[in-house]
Amino acid sequence: MLNTQQDRLMADIDQMVAAHGSTRSGLIPILQDVQQRYHAISDFAMQVIADRLGIHPVEVYSVVTFYSFLSDRYQGRFVIRLCRTISCAMAGTTAVAQQLRNDLGINFGQTTEDGRFTLEWANCIGMCDQGPAMLINDQVFTAVSPEAVHDILASCAKAFGPHTTQPVEESHA
Ligand code: FES
Image (cartoon, rainbow, N blue to C red; front, side, top):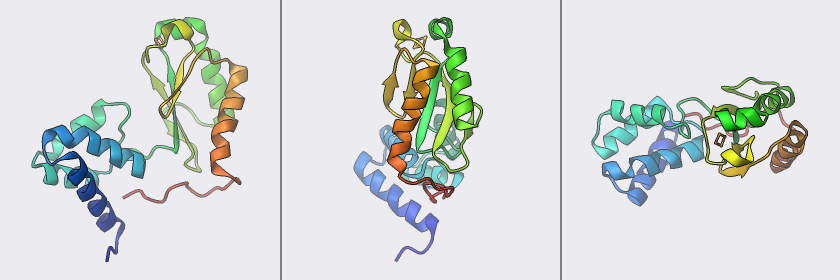
């Protein structure tokens, strides 16, 4: 019987290791799975993964902090990444960024109190001729206008049902 959140996390990681392998090549897929399930990769998770793969925890930490899609901080159910590279900037990123700040009530690098949305900057995501471009999780949005921001966020919010001030996930192990 799994009693604690850490027990559950360890059991989950063991399943992920079984699925992706216990060698270095399994590291990123395992980290992606942990990120998706727990919305963050905690110090404890990094230690368990390092132990299971037989590598140093610093190596795991360096991978987590290198890739923008991985994070040791809790991230919301929807992670919004707005491109701030030059082509998008010239197409109007600043106004879109301000609309996102206004609608979500947070700044870049922050997560809404209810755990729904995280707002991040991104560098070029390969849609330079269709800017301003942004990602919400894996979905790409192009030619985003400030007016479109409200509808895009509303469509995300539909996934949650009635409003709640409780975090979407309690799993911060
Ligand atoms: S500059 Fe924004 S997608 Fe390339």
